[in-house]
Length: 151
Image 1 (cartoon, one colour):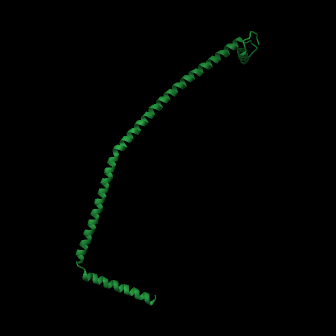
Image 2 (cartoon, one colour):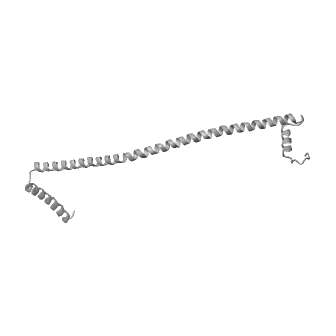
Image 3 (cartoon, rainbow, N blue to C red):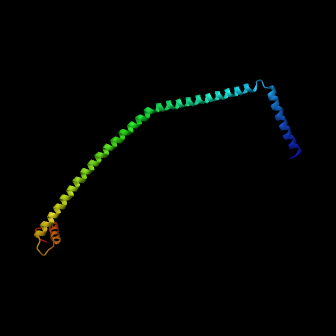
């Protein structure tokens, strides 16, 4: 360490010691009084923090209670919309079910009609023809123009 740095450190230590002694000797109050004042200041700071916390809590509570009617109204509105959507979905489901039932019955009737036509054509066709040929002949005959001449 250089001579200048050592002198600086020694001067700093000596200055701190002189300052501490001067502070003790010239203090306007005793140590007990200073500690009591420090404790009072800490208690005041603690009370101020507790009051700020309580005030903040009451402000938050007031704001939440102010929002509660809006939240309840919005919740009720959403519930009504969901109920309406469910009712509409039930109506659509019932309508679709009815349509499927009706269409199924129509398809079954068409299948039965075709089966009856095939059976009738099979009975009317000569024994050598198969039912498919009889149907084909009937279809061809049904499509032939009515000019009076047979095809």
